[in-house]
Structure formats: C-alpha cells, structure tokens
Amino acid sequence: MAVADPITISLTTDEIALVQDSWAEATTPNAANGDEPATAIASILYNGLFSLHPELKELFDDINSQSASLGAVLGVAIGALSDIESITPALESLGKLHGRIPSVQPEHFDVVGKILIATLSDKFGEKWTLELQTPWVKVYAYVSGRIVASMLAVRDANV
Ligand code: HEM
Image 1 (tube, helix red, strand yellow):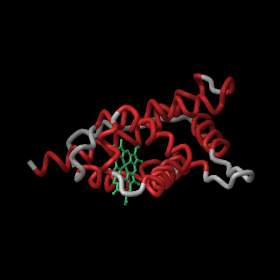
Image 2 (cartoon, protein in one colour; image 1 turned 90 degrees about the vertical axis):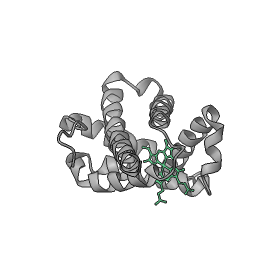
Image 3 (tube, helix red, strand yellow; image 1 turned 45 degrees about the vertical axis):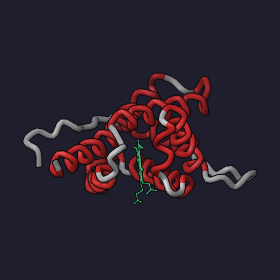
Image 4 (cartoon, protein in one colour; image 1 turned 135 degrees about the horizontal axis):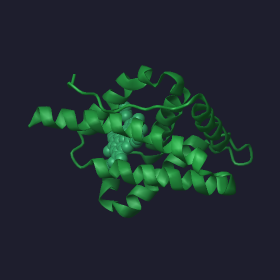
C-alpha cells in the first residue's frame, strides 16, 4: 500500500442521487428495440476511443461483450456510490488486468471519460446541467483513477 492514497471522492447525498437517477434514466431498457442501454453507451465509448486510436481495436476479441463488461462496471460503481470504497478491490483487480495489456495507457482513460460526458450530455440535452456534470466527472475520475493507479503499479513492479 502506498504511503499516501490521493484517489478520493467526495459527493453530497444530492450528487449521489443525481448520478444514480440519471444513470437509471440513461440505461432504462428500450422496449422498442430490445437494446441493453448500458452496453450501448459503453460501445459508444469504445467506438469513440477507436476513432482516435484505431490501433487499439485489435486488442479486443469481442467488442460487444467488452462493452457489456464496461457498462456493468459503471453500473456497479454507480450503485455503490454511498459506499464507494466497497468496490475499490474490484477496481484494483481491473487495473491489474489492464496493466498486463501494454498498449493501454492512462490517456486512453481520459479519452473515454470525455466521450462518456459528451454522450450523456447529448442524451440529456437541455436537462444536462453543470450541477449534473460535476458529480459525473468526479465519479469517472475516481473509477478510472483507481483502475489506472493499479495498472501503473503493476507495470512498475514488473520492470
Ligand atoms: C473506466 C474505464 C474502463 C473500464 C470500467 C474497463 C473495464 C473492463 C472490463 C470489465 C474488462 C473485462 C475484464 C475481464 O474480461 O475480466 C476490460 C478488458 C479490457 N479493457 Fe477495459 N475498461 C476501461 C477502460 C479501458 C481503456 C481506456 C482501454 C484502452 C484500450 C481498455 C482496454 C481493455 C482491453 C484491451 C481489455 C481486454 C479485452 C479482451 O481480452 O478482449 N479498457 N475492461
């Protein structure tokens, strides 16, 4: 364990509710086409990442199942916001997994974060306010920060 642990998140009860309610709204299954919306959002994230970094595409065996996994992780993290530390071990294992894939870099997580916010902002239109965006940015920074920190720690340990 590092001496200092700088990856923290501080959310008010209202902010937790804003993120949880907006995620629930954004991921309500669409009866018309049977899509799983969390997967659909995640696949937008990957497609956006590939448009900037096409070389990453070959790392993925099956982008659909991958999108489902990423959507599920976001859902679990958002569900656990009142006790986010409870999922830290899961985020750290994910970090170790990403650490074993050399071409995955911290800046790719920043790209995914920007696309996530842009996608939500698009989806919510004028209902997307700074009040809503601020806690979303904090949540993604926490989730990706935890993953990236263990990803880099694994790589450091292996050099
Ligand atoms: C917050 C952001 C992210 C989350 C929550 C996430 C989550 C996941 C999950 C759940 C898996 C599957 C783990 C398993 O199979 O047990 C995975 C695998 C993977 N992720 Fe991520 N990921 C994120 C960002 C990224 C980024 C930015 C990249 C950059 C290229 C990336 C590349 C990969 C690759 C290459 C795999 C393995 C794919 C395969 O084996 O087919 N991930 N990720």
